[in-house]
Amino acid sequence: MRFNLIVSFFLVSLLFACKNDSIGQGNPKNIAEQIAKDPGIMVDVRTPEEWNSGHHPRAIHADWDGGQFQLESAKWDPSKTYYLYCAAGGRSSAATEYLKSKGFKKVYNLGGYNQVKNLK
Image 1 (cartoon, one colour):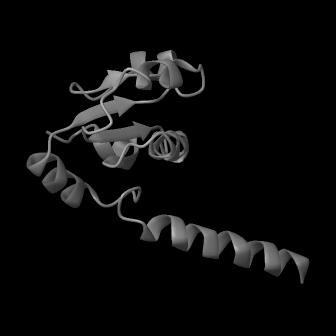
Image 2 (tube, rainbow, N blue to C red):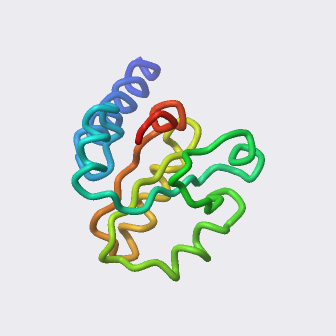
């Protein structure tokens, strides 16, 4: 019974997290269309090791786990559009929420690097 309650809570939380378009991971086709309309700034929030193993050529680096993201984002323009990604979507989701809490309105969580690496 307790296990079912925990699983149900997790699934409902996941449903609500994916429903919000401004932070949804979306599919690559929709992401490509959005970026074509509003190129914005792509931000890789992974660790330096992950960044060095490969990153999107348009991305800037701001490590979420190491605290660099919070320092760097304090210098960013909240009226611009930001596209965030990490390895699987967890850190970029946290970073998206952080920016939104700081008054940024156009912030998109693109999910993981594999979903982003081939975008133009």
